[in-house]
Length: 406
Image 1 (cartoon, one colour):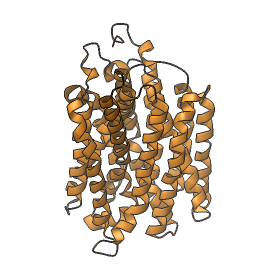
Image 2: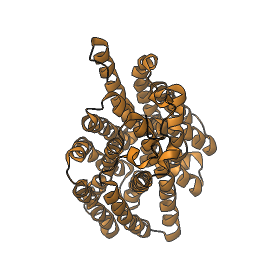
Image 3: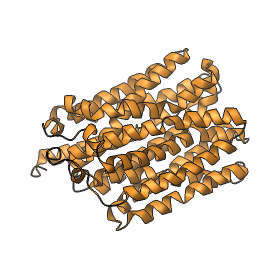
Image 4: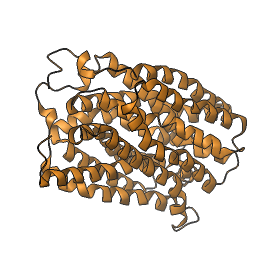
């Protein structure tokens, strides 16, 4: 970092604000669909396969577009790339509520989610670049902002929809999140002229070089299975509760409990991850809640549903855990960006089939029992991979000497 000056302190404050408002907007495009999924599907005349694709679209975007984020950052700079990504979120979210075609709705959702995917990959490298001495704190702050945005979209989409033209105007409920994304773009407009592009170094680490490391694949596989769990939960949990007898509003609140539990934990877990002598114990404590949530839903989704919702919410906080690991497992911002890009894009490719398969299993079996038990079974390899990822290691140490020079 350069010596602290009045200008550099201002820039650090501005990038801090930018990171927080960016993180807040990284999930509403995806999770706001779940509480009004029936209304969207019915209103647009979607086939079951199209509805399932809509729930899978976030992980598809993260897997495909997310892989391009480091290359985009090298070409435009990290700050310009983030601004462009946010503008894509705004445009996609604002336009998709104006269409009546399922195909156009899916296409514009892809545009919005693509912007979200690029920003998602760049966040850890932005933290490493601007706050290398505060990785745990900044990761905690932006993870908490992300959880707040996630919870807000889960809980407030239905109430916002109820203030629209109809009794449950899903278009009005979804449009609100385009407005919050537009607000988030404001600080990034001021940041683009100060762009730094360390990725332009000719000896830079790329996602291709990360793919030749054991650490890269371990992180990607663990990330993929946690993302599969999270997006299956975010995409379908509200529907599980609705099928068990909850009203749309109640189901949205229950999904909100799942996401809200992550707000305080997202602030605590990164710091614990940085300070822990053995991160495997922390991982074990988090993942022990998956069986509680899934088995509770299987036995009785209408019995103390808030407890099953909360347990699954604790399980999904493996996300801030691995986000912190991404920053800890590389020595430089360049390495962090490459590791983040490979981990998230490959991980989301693994996760892409999750929400779609859950919907397909539900249609094939006529109940939620089999899909929920499959998700429970997948938590076992997720845990084993997490144990491997928790072992101390650095990406640069597993690269060829000529590649790791940055």
